[in-house]
Image (cartoon, rainbow, N blue to C red; front, side):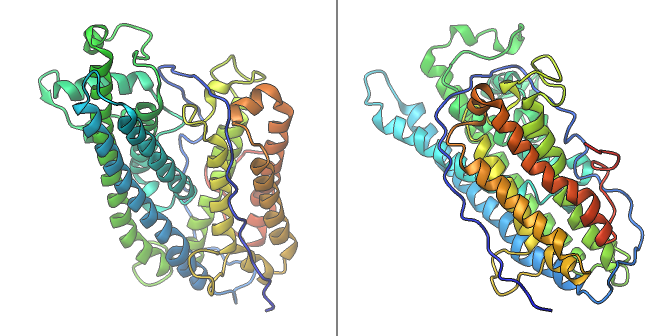
Length: 423
């Protein structure tokens, strides 16, 4: 088989120049609530049985997913250290002190949060095994978006400061996902207001108005240290659980393996590709665009309140990273440039290079389109919603082929999230 020369796009730095102030108590979306739940699979004979599916699984596990998860753990640990360094200065600050060193430390913490979330947005697309079990509990503990609650975080700032909740010692690992994770860290590090965001009375926040501005900053940064420590711990848990699951996936089809046939293992990986459908196309673009029910009045209403990561204004870079991760999984291009076997090669092997080429081209078109924004998604939605409609159409061009040509050519099954979805 003659192989094509593959390439991955260089990520372009996306400049964001406007802010989005959105401190609602919670936002939610139906899209993604059951993401990662896989349809039961039975051994299916693919169109072509000569393709080395085991090699595809090994490459994707060893050269793409494992390095991505490991890099996230490294960034999460660095994030915790950076926030700890900043908070030590914040706690020691006294009136009259020079704030420059403190401001620099906060800026460094924000930069490290960006590095961490950028790495996570790659991992987000690789939701296989540990990130999908138990209703995606581990994934949600790391990053619960689109279900978030700044009010819940504000309450936990005080619960953590008090050290207990109704007489029980505070334990972040027992708290709901919307009060922890990278979402909470963004709110704690980027919010410029020291007022709490709750719109109704919360007993634990009764003393908040009596606290000085500095005391509020200290309480928030100390909870941010706890939150980022928890994220780092979850990242280590992910890598530990993945190490076991990775072996299972690479040995799919062998005796006593949970995947009775190697094709079932390939199907589990292909399910992850559909993150592009429900989360990128529908939740991240379609919902704020008004194609689905949102927080601004439902279908037909543009809603910047539903844009991802509004305080850091990084939604566009999130989308680019999601598409890049999809591209890596599809083409098999990761840390090892010598081994790049991917789904594109599988399609070529079953005489469907047209689908392979089209998916690659449309994915790159979507990346190029987003890279040209030069403004935040919220600004684009407000000033030029038609441009966001074009972005949505570019992503839809990829997902439409995933649902039909890709699935049919490789004799794969659609995941639950895509079944019956004909948009």
